[in-house]
Image (tube, rainbow, N blue to C red):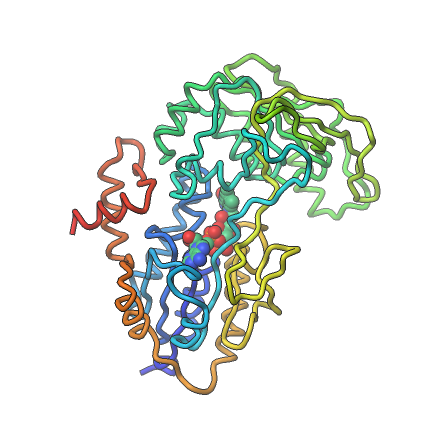
Length: 441
Ligand SMILES: Cc1cc2nc3c(=O)[nH]c(=O)nc-3n(C[C@H](O)[C@H](O)[C@H](O)COP(=O)(O)OP(=O)(O)OC[C@H]3O[C@@H](n4cnc5c(N)ncnc54)[C@H](O)[C@@H]3O)c2cc1C
């Protein structure tokens, strides 16, 4: 018996934030019972529903998470159970010694400009969820039989969106993009995609690897105005930052050599432009942009405006968490209120619900390990009943949870349904996952 075998922890959310807490607990509190609760039957959050389908290598981090669950008898996956809908925080706190909230930040931030409610404006979470078969967004049905789309932002998510909209079925053959999305993207009359960045090339929020991919598309050209690209880095920038920025600048210079309209689609990268109004009647007909400049590190409007005709706007400007009843919430920043990850006695936050939508998968690892250290240091007093009690509660409520073995059956069904070289044909509704599972058992 190890020192922690009478302790139990519920982790709400099986994305990277939650999975790294589970990993840390296994290393640092051996014997502790860990239940990972997720509202979907499918685990691993944005690894499945966010990371771009043509980035299968990145998605492979799910193999490590799978090991965390399958190689340890003390870890359970309890899928298809939602905090706030099926169980409350009070109930979990009565069952487990600690509860870690790691339920992500899936609600798109708003631009806060007139016209944002027009038909044809989508947030990136919804749009990305649509092409990734996320059950919440499979019915989004964006109309791609348009001539121009505007993507707001030039972070990696914005680049994912522009790239996926530009790819051909051949380029996506090895991916698990939703069939309905690939069909629509390929049939689309879409010709031009504008990517707007508020700041300049030196502040671009994307990484160089993602940007480089934009120059390697089979049926789309990416262009940028070379005249606004600086030759040198500011003296004030430290050497490490200079190196990172120089690589991005070099890629932009390569892209600036390309010509618009040479291929089926053109992606136009526009720096120093901030949206001020979405134009049109009920539907989007255009976007009004204001030219900006960066002064002492701050982005300011110049008052000069220009309009671009477009029929769709996709905002890639970050996201916020859900305010779940009984959980203290910071409305302004859209995250759970916490102090270094401590929410209230025995309750912790990890991942994007704690930090907001920033950083890479790896950022969650460091952060979740730090939160787990606090959690273990706080273990004290009365021991709670643990996982058996959750089983009783779910049985009483007649809720069908999905175990990890169940998930492996669903996963196998998806893999069997795929046409090679695609790795899987994803289910896009919870009902279909459960029906498939019940039929296969
Ligand atoms: C479009 C997109 C692409 C990205 N691509 C990359 C990339 O290529 N490389 C990279 O390093 N990073 C990438 N990231 C960032 C990375 O995905 C995040 O850092 C990471 O997923 C955050 O982990 P999380 O666990 O906090 O949230 P999530 O991954 O969102 O996980 C939250 C989990 O909580 C569950 N949940 C939600 N509500 C409830 C509830 N009420 N009850 C129970 N469970 C609930 C969800 O179903 C989900 O499984 C990308 C992000 C986005 C949005």
